Amino acid sequence: MTMTAGVLSLVAFFALGCDSNSADDGADARDEQPDQADVFDSADVVGPEARADDAVRDGEDVVPGDVPGDAPDGEVCEPTAANILGPYYIAGAPERWDLVEPGMAGTRLTISGRVLGPDCAPVPDAVVDVWQADADGVYDNAGWLLRGWSRADADGVWKVHTIVPGRYATGGTFRPAHIHVRVGASGYVLLTTQLYFAGDPYNESDPYYVPSLALVPGALPDGSLTASFDFVLVAE
Ligand code: FE
Image 1 (cartoon, rainbow, N blue to C red):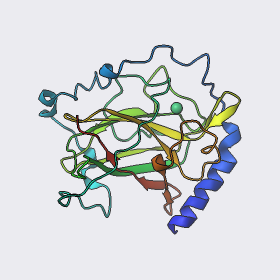
Image 2: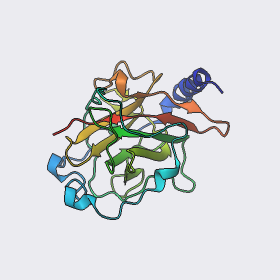
Image 3: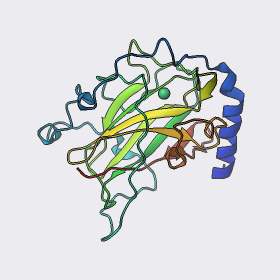
Image 4: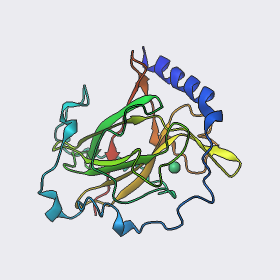
């Protein structure tokens, strides 16, 4: 299937799925936002002393077609746009890149790419922390469903295996499907952002949507989706 067909499939998926989401962004939202400094507390990875430990890199065999390497001299990469933390972040998620559990509803989605510095050079061992709603637009605020963090490998390659999140109601409308991400690495400003989906009809009316954060997934023969996204961090 071509990329265009994949996008069209995704658009159709969104058009069919929007009525099934029912989570409320209001009263049950967490009141206490974690302080920026608390991010990755459980992972304890932001400091350089924590970086020299036992990185588990389940993702080293992924990202077909991506050839990690040093950036060409003089190249400049545009920093990834920051986005809201949102009310559902919880520090302390388990370390794992595969968030899909047996029987979990939702279209399977693998996102992969690299974590880069402003000079386009890979950022080894960057921590990528992901959290999102389930296929019905509901966050697990009691456990760790669809929450997890993993490290980019020595070439800055990261990935997550998850599902396409459902939309959830807020203020009489729906937030477009989105995946929350925090990316941290020693020597770089912590990036808090969200990944969106090209073609979601709620993108344009969403106050937080940024086109540069939109994934453009392609569909695989088994019905799952793949997308790539490179994070570009700002040096401290
Ligand atoms: Fe959200």
